[in-house]
Amino acid sequence: MEMTLRWFGTGHDTVTLKQIRQIPGVTGVITTLYDTEPGEVWSRERIKALKDEVEASGLHISGIESVNIHDAIKVGTPDRDMYIDNYIETLKNLGEEDIHLVCYNFMPVFDWTRTELARKRADGSTVLAYSQKTIDSIDPADMFSSISKDANGAVLPGWEPERMAKIKELFEMYKDVDEEKLFENLKYFLERIMPVCDKYDINMAIHPDDPAWSVFGLPRIIINLDNIMRMMKMVDNPHNGVTFCAGSYGTNRANDLPTMIRALKGRLHFAHVRNLKFNSDDDFEEAAHLSSDGSFDMYEIMKALYEIGFEGPIRPDHGRMIWDEVAMPGYGLYDRALGATYLNGLWEAIVKSCS
Ligand code: DNO
Image 1 (cartoon, protein in one colour):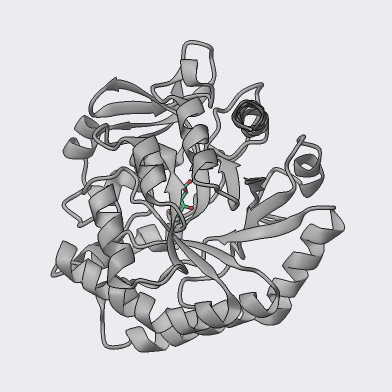
Image 2 (image 1 turned 180 degrees about the horizontal axis):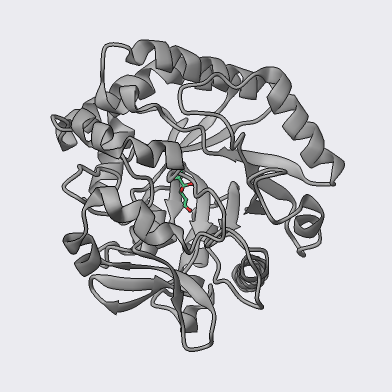
């Protein structure tokens, strides 16, 4: 595996490349062109400029998170082919710049969903949290305004204000899209992009729906092993793979994380490893990466990755906000650096004890 950190780019991230370069064992970043809209073509020049900037800091681009999918593709409207053509053009430009991993999601309307961005824990740190009771009592249109005051001024990925402003329209667009239709539209998209992925050796890594069930009555399909298997079989190409996000699949306690990892051998292209603490089945908060701080056995997760011979990028995921840092919720420097160091420690111990 290669240890990486997510970086949103100069002007969008409070964390600098210099700081990332100084986290022991972190050699790459997972980044994006944060100011592009879904459906836009990423020009070769902009990709190259981003790459040059990252490389000048002594790091490299290990993958893109995300090239977002336009709603027309998810809904399957008549103009989807134009947006898929644009996506193919972006993949070609990434491939020509020697970038071979793209993380994306196929979630309708909302990307990840949390009901709090700064729940206070006993140690005084703050974390993102989810309560099903809150979701059940809130109008989706009010969701963004109810949490945005805790965003520390950051634009949250998937929760861009322009997008939230059209929330009613978005719900309307998806009104006839059920799970079967979403699978069908995903298949159509994947079939069309696989030739360019084959040509440039680009691994597509679908991110799970977070939380891993339907919210606000919207269909969600990338939620458990059966559905991932279906997704991979319906377009059976090694470039059609997954991002294994422990914190997203782990929201559903029926998902056995190490077993899932073992079943994804060869198609698991990217790993997000973080921990959650459950207060009940439908209320959880994000914890420090350390096993004892949350509900997951992080050693078993890392061991399963080792056992399948995982060689792709891994990143610590959402961190707690600690030491008075002011940053995008989940994406400060300090707790993610602690997470990377802890995961590297587990990995070293696993490698040495298994070889
Ligand atoms: C949240 C992230 C997601 C993820 C996208 C991938 O912090 O894990 O926003 O990047 O769903 O497209």
